[in-house]
Image (cartoon, rainbow, N blue to C red; front, top):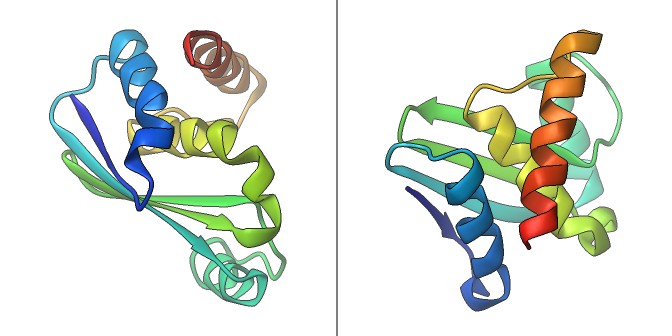
Length: 114
């Protein structure tokens, strides 16, 4: 079961419920933080070797702990970005067309329930 660690937990409780229904993860705690563009660019360069601002970065530290960083300029898209980051943490990716389609399908299923 997913537990999001957020400052406004009530606002995002539907994401937790939808994600748990579609993905059914084992015990998983994920922190979500909003970071300045300059900081997310720096982190993106370190971990992905891409020297540019990105919308979301996600990190899986173990099977039960993860972190999502969202660039402040993308705050309006926060639900979609949290869902996208969560899917990365539980193993989904979009490195090729097949993986991208599968991940996109899961995103749509979860968003529909939110």
